[in-house]
Image (cartoon, rainbow, N blue to C red; front, side, top):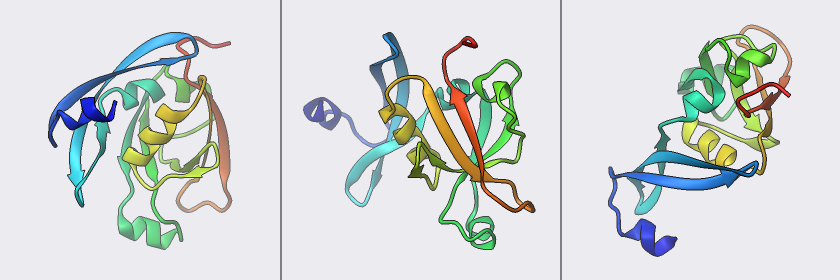
Length: 143
């Protein structure tokens, strides 16, 4: 796989096929260069996987809430995986399955490395105390 990825350059859009839950999935990723390393810059269908519009929080928001970073859920689409939880828009995801995430790229990396369709998202809502935890099933149907 390393040789295959090495044949691309930063900015290239690359299809990646993987198996999750016995199903074949294909994502399109965009490669970027960071300090000489190629990382996943974006996953084009991460919003569809969650059924939500996502954005990285800014440094001021992170500092004000004493976190290293996170991903805000801007909108939740009806019928998507997040709509099947009690999560509300504005939730800031700070960890997935116990792994801290600081931005969308890290969120994508953790989600793609997860076996199966079940995730646990931890985070907070600005202006409210406490950590909230949401179990999420990424399968397309409710079980």
